[in-house]
Image 1 (cartoon, rainbow, N blue to C red):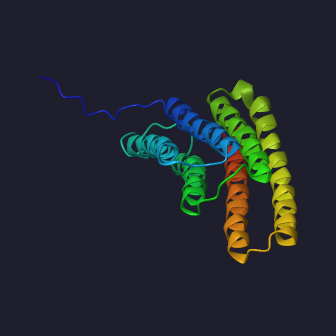
Image 2 (cartoon, one colour; image 1 turned 180 degrees about the vertical axis):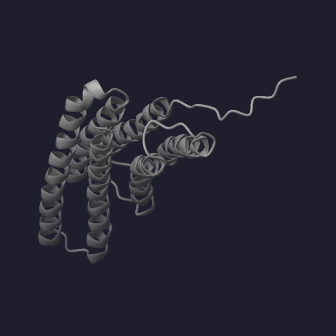
Amino acid sequence: MLINFMPKEFNFFDLFDKQVEYAVTAAKYFKELVAKGAIDDASLQKMRDIEHDADDAAHSIIANLNKTFITPFDREDIHTLAKEVDDIPDMINTIVSRLHIYKIKGVDTKLVEFAAVIEQSTVAVACAVNGMRNSKHAKKVTDCCVEINRLENVGDAMRDAALAELFENEKDPIEVIKRKEIYQDAETVLDVCEDIAHMVESILVKQA
């Protein structure tokens, strides 16, 4: 019986496509949850399941990276990109968990606005990552990265406005602490998306 000692080849682009799909799913579900205004146990578990699936996708990329010598771009960049994309559902899951733990009830219009921008940014991340498999899509990938950067700036302004309103109108210091943390975490998701955009742009430059 012949034994094949040649290293296997994996389609890392397919693996990344699957990973960003989970990130988009998490963002869309987050938007749905904040529009309802309450996080129950079932909703919390569903978000945890999405985050767990996203973790599995990231682990699959890293595991396969250790099994092959043939990669579409630098091994370190593959590892970094996988970890950064995984940060999106991780961070969204953290926000949902805190909303549940802090027992924040009612629809927070500021958070609803944040959720919409997070969804847009995550969809743009998926666009950028999906386009990496074909050099002919470089312009589209770049446009997606520009959009991610724009949305991060929007997020900065939204965070500052939300905090200013919070400090002006909320008299309960505990409520201020809770919502301040949530708003800052929501903006952090957009920071993560921007980090991914910079990573994708760096990879494109190296491949040019």
